[in-house]
Image 1 (cartoon, rainbow over the protein chains, first blue to last red):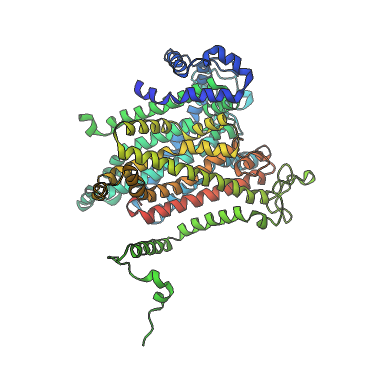
Image 2 (tube, chains in turn red, cyan):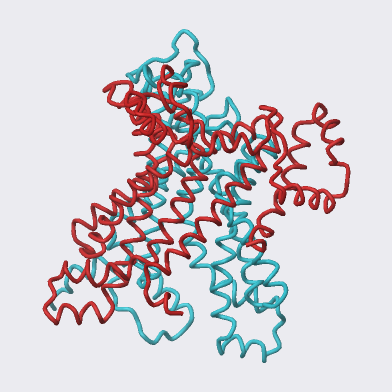
Length: 315
Length: 308
């Protein structure tokens, strides 16, 4: 674990220094006092030492510790990415299996086109058009932001995940408001992860169906779909966990544009705004959290392998 | 004498059966090209993708002629935010600029970014990958760890960080995207090299006394090219989306240069009333990246039937 962390940190001091040049004189004196005049290896060691002690520095903009900021912004992204991934899995996995099993016929073609659209759509544009149609014209969903202004401080933030908090507190009006704000961005992000998950599931399915055991099952009298779901699907699960984990991690990190369009106060928005304000401590902290989340999710899917695949349990 | 079946005459050379035993290297090459062209002809979707890409190139080259001399940056404050109509096919934006002209000229920025990123990423990826794969050992380990570091970050966040550090602008956007886009190519080239390096023909070239660099550049790199180029076509859509995303956040081409991502961003504040300002450039991004995706998919099927 430390090895992996050591691998992704060395980018950061470089960024911090380049960022400093970008901001010029105002910050330069303060930065000097923080220790930017020392040699880079020394800075790096100091930074590493602080990091180990959980100190990510102070944000120049909010003048709060970066860690506090991150704890404030991260739940919003977590909520959005989780709902989106759940949507992507619920639709994407069956669609992918269907496409793989009917390779070359019309269900496959439909899934392919839907996937291609998802791959080619600029998220920020889809968000704007979605807002225009469903909020502006039809008024089916709520507008940007996480919750209506009136409900903002109604619920005591226990987890920071508004749906959970309001449900726990029994504030159902606030729950509805939060859900109405969540629908559009999560469907749009869910569509992206759907496109990816469906495409990968399709190729895994095709790979499994060409194996000899699939033919054997059919020859023994299994119905085609019975074979697909009972024989092939369990074998698809293992690589699928990696894919879903990867897509989840990407959404947690990469929701930058969606969060900008929907004014969603999450990690992506925090990193972007800090970047524009040359708030390098915040950017570094955010990036480290992003990397840590990435690694954490990879570890989690390694653990899940062992639960799903009995062959790995024996070793 | 009975005439030949018409089909043969129409298809001409391409209808000849491929030779299994080519007599010369040029015949082998033509043969290969003919087989590929025929496969392409059987995939109308791929041709459609290719057609859109060709149209994009034409749009970029012939922008002044296509817009009939309408300037993409001429402002007309009395005619701002007009809906699409006869005078302005796609309407006008918040400064009264013609959106059709801006969309056509915007193809230049998109094409420039895509082409430049490709020109940077392919040689860098190839060099790092083949070098690592062929030399192995310490150099391999170092180069691959560097690659891993870049791969550990989501490319948009990394591109954002670079673009913000370098400052906004189209050249910096290209550099930022290229910096985040090369690692997969290095990985790919390394894997290909590893499988080529131990073949008999490389051993033969070594015995003939060829230098390391000659083997790398003349024998290994050409064999890696096709998979790298296909990968690049598949990545083009992603590059366009990243570039548009940077433009949307204000880190791409600077105003008044027309760029699709930035155009979507300017329409953001009026999207509920003047939908066309954002929608039309966004549609352009979507169509072009869809075309690159289709083309890449098709090319992959044609060149590599195994990974369909």
